[in-house]
Image 1 (cartoon, rainbow, N blue to C red):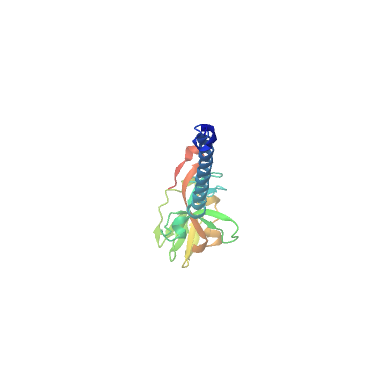
Image 2: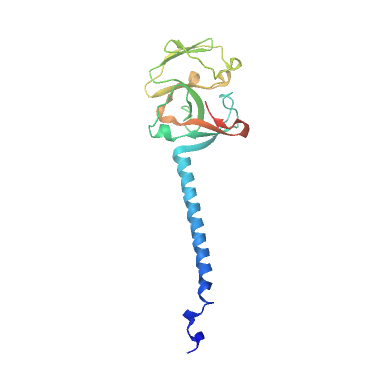
Length: 194
């Protein structure tokens, strides 16, 4: 019997199949990793963080027109954190729920809110608002309102250029779907929101 009659013992034939199997396994591993990465991104965007573009000037100077931010949807959706006074929230506008607004929470359920010559009072105490520069204050007033249970009174930081709870009332809790947490564009303003 000649050595060439036994194909399994041919030293040149054995390695030929290995590179094909290795490259196929490498491609499948890459595809698996890509699918896993896409799944993680979808979970992050749908349930935890969502990128949002700011439109308008009502939250200046904290947020300006066309800035890009991340909102945290996880905290409010799953009840891991309560909405606090001072939070910058994103919600469906009560007048037209196809539109989203971003404002700052001023009054919590049950709070009494009034405005005198631009000064906001919550439960008879003057609210300290370092985030509203003097040039953005609105000198007008508003009669006292009591925030209904399950609702929140919100205002824009640029008081003289904001459509907010002074005009269309409080926001139901069910319509608030995120908290603004991080500016990612433009790069020079990148950072956590306060």
